[in-house]
Image (cartoon, rainbow, N blue to C red; front, side):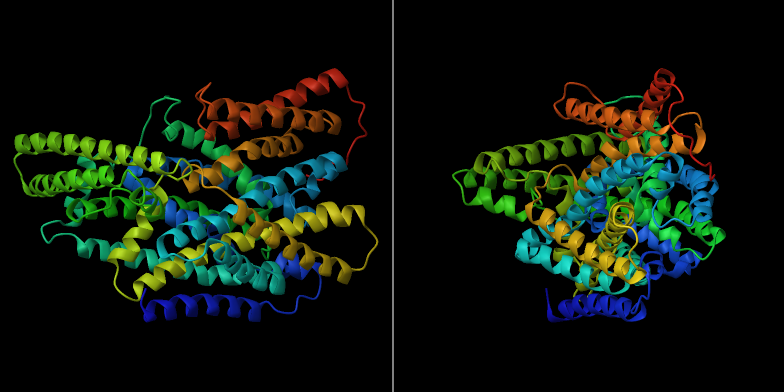
Length: 570
């Protein structure tokens, strides 16, 4: 990195933190601190919701996902617009009518205190882990690529987030997220233009997509019911809808964004904005990853993108074997470059089909070399991370982009990390202070709860840093966060749907059903992880939701109507 990159990176982050702290200073009460005084406009809500979901993992992992597996991952988001409509029609009016600080307050009015506490604890568990991962994700990658110390990088990101989140609460989070989303959009758009500019003169946008299609990267839709395939149209529409319903409807990190809305209409419009823009945004980010793939068809790419793993194998007895694999890859790359160019420029259909077959053969050979490289890395260091999807885009940024833009793209990554982490610790603090502390320590004045909310913000920020410092990289990072959510979200969503729509089910049946169901979902996940069954994690959201409702209805039939009736506030 050059001096100009450092200036842009540090200047961008300092401005965002300073501006957010200044504009949101001086919260007078809990209402101001946790709900931003309920003054947010719809565009602020929409951008804040998008920024909360678009963590650094999105901008590091998603292009790498597309580089290796193509555009199919976009199917994961197909259920999101459906979920936005349901949330606007059902969730938002209820939350605003009750004037709640957290989503879980409603559950006490509908069921009882123990049900509210259980769902709050489930949220705190999964979101506490996720908050640590949103710090850890950019830290582990930047430390590996740039040589920065991982421990201090985790602390630096965490402390920056804590500073402005504690000072201004929800309002500071929402204000800074507008600036962060501007930086994110600008950086990704510039990256897109530069990739196109770096392609050979004969390769236009349409020809680049043609090359990507020949390599199987443009297969967006998969209508199969193959459970071994994580991302299909059906898993996206069904599992993705239930995941989005739970995430945006019951996860406090998102609920808190639209609870700050000036009115029901402002909150609804903000969520509709998210529903309309989220899928195109993810499609665009995946497209950048596909174009990076096309770029590397004409420019040399590393055999393995994680530099720390390569360092391990090159300092071992397997260095010569690894170098031999690199030489073989360069030979294949030379052939690929010629065949891909011929494929893009020829107009003869028969020749095009013959070239397509050659492309697939060369691609298979390259993939085999990459697998052999991973085997050598594992032999050199059994603890090494061989999944290099998360390192593809950062490698492209640092080794290809011009001065200045490198600093801007790193600012994009760190801004995304800060925006999502700020929302998470803000929501964790709200849930802890309102659903646990205030519920058990009532009778204090408003200033006391304001100070405790700030204290819990610091506490959860420290916990997130500790999780980040002790985390281990597993799976593709964007998948890892969604896997953690899927283990808990379906269960929580089922409890809320029972509260909204199944009026005869009482608290005891719901509470017991939620406990049984959580054990069931975790068991299913472990069976899949150990390859005993094939169950893509997205389906856990659907299964968790349906089974908790079924178990609760069955238990209610057994227990009878013994619970005290709750006031229906819907």
